[in-house]
Image (cartoon, rainbow, N blue to C red):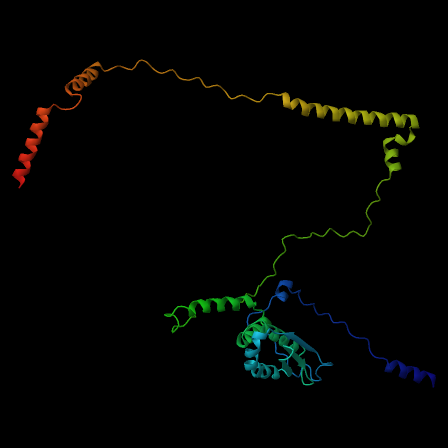
Length: 311
């Protein structure tokens, strides 16, 4: 009876798994795994991802200045409507001057309360509700709020021009393109790893090992002291020599510039005697001093005749 039982036990044992001789897939480049493909969108967080909801209730509150009270009264129904889509309650306390947002039992998105907190913070900082909603949605899409601020500044300047009020402003507004880097940016400083060695580094030499290598270990104490004194004296001599050289630098005269000899004025130029004679004759012809009375009268009479002829 023992033999058939053993045969049954052997038959019941599971067969060993067969080894697959398939080739392993080629290794994928890490840079391809880090990049986001074009056109890919993150799937929305739905109730199916968190059907049981949140474990505990969480809330955030912010204070707002008194001058924002009138605006918040008007736009608060819109705020409640926008937050009710994500099952988040919003309460406005005008006595304390605060806004609070709290989760409910139906809230399934854990990040909805963080977005609601950012919304009430921006409302308290004098940002309109329409722009607040856009800023919060853009931040979830990895778009920085500074781009939205730039467009608002441009619109404010364009609204001042009466000619452009009736025209479209799309050509003036900046267009920001989202960049998906295909390759990971390499750091400026690369830490080069040393080759791995299983053996530990060599043990540093001790003072005794150094003395044994140089032969000082076997010297007597008097000889060691004498050697130390000689080394100190040699160092002192070098230091004195360097100091003396630095002091002597002040007594070294600077290099003088080469003296350029002045050229003598050439006295071999020819003198034009005839030109000098003509200048003297012309000077004699010219009369020095005032004109005589008769010549003055003749000039006046000639001028009067010319005037009469012109008339």
